Amino acid sequence: MKKHLILFAAVAGSFLASAQDPWAIKTNLTDLVVGRYSIGAETQVSDHVSIGLDVDLIFRELFMESSHPWYPSQQARKTGVILQPQLRWHPGGKGLLGTYASLDGYFGFASYLMDMPLQGMIAPPEWQAAGGSLHLGHQLKMGKLLLDSFLGATWALDDNTSIYQESTALFPPPTGLRMSGGIRLGLLLGE
Picture (cartoon, one colour):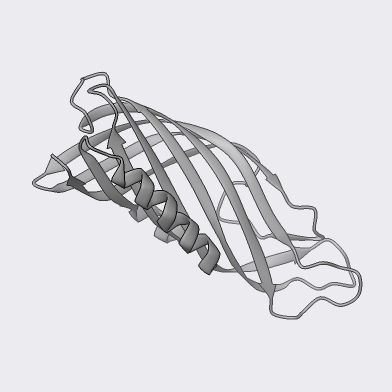
């Protein structure tokens, strides 16, 4: 996990060092509900365009269901990272503020630490995902604080070939099209 944090710090540092226009640092408050911790940055490229990058760290306890009778279902700890690059169009021409349409990428990787270690030829399960999102959102400035609410759809393709799968009783299946949205809270800088 330290490698992921160092990589993020290097990318974010170079991204923000080159940002001469207004920029913001944000966290996604809704990620906390699903066991993710988000940090992100967005910078204005022009009055109508901004780019951003969110990095979500995953630390989540969950139940893994087994499709094989010799390997019982069990609790596990999922740890990993999700990168979400963003391209935003602000039709009102107010830089980072106001209504926007966003095209986001989605690239994730995680591993599972099982409560009962697996025996034999079964490798510990891993999770990889890629996809994209289309969101409509609105950013509102309150002093230096930035409130960013968004809603749209996400398409993701998960790659999990293990006999274990995450129990998804409360959430939609990870692969396919689903609704997505949330609320980010940020700090507006560089004005």
